[in-house]
Image (cartoon, rainbow, N blue to C red; front, top):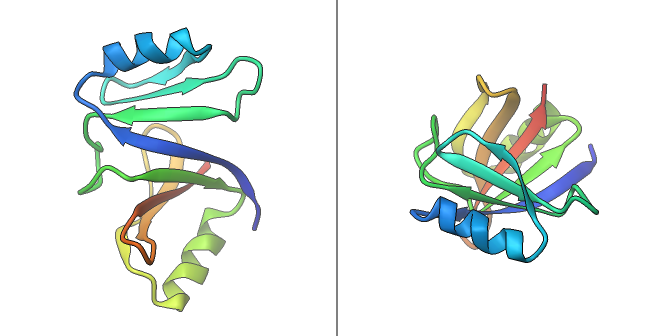
Length: 115
C-alpha cells in the first residue's frame, strides 16, 4: 500500500470566504460539492486543502484525508491493529471508497481511494 496524497481537512462555516482567501495564496477551487470544497495548487496539484461544513455520510468532519492506492488493504491493517474505526469502509456516491479511523492523539483520518 502506498500514499498518494495527504490533505488537511478543516471544518468551515465560511467556505466562500476561505476560497477567496486561499486564492490569494495561489490555490484554485478544484472540487466543490457545496458541503465540501477542495482547493489545489495549479503548479503542484497534490498540494491541497479541504473545507467542510459537515460530512455527507459520516458522523464527524475528519481532521485530514490520506489517499492510498488500496483502501481495502489499509482498512484490513488498521482493523487488525485494533484502531478505532469511526466510519465504516464504504463506497460513496461522489466516487471514493473510504473509511474514518482515529489516530492515537484522537484525530480523525479519512482514508480513501478514488474508484
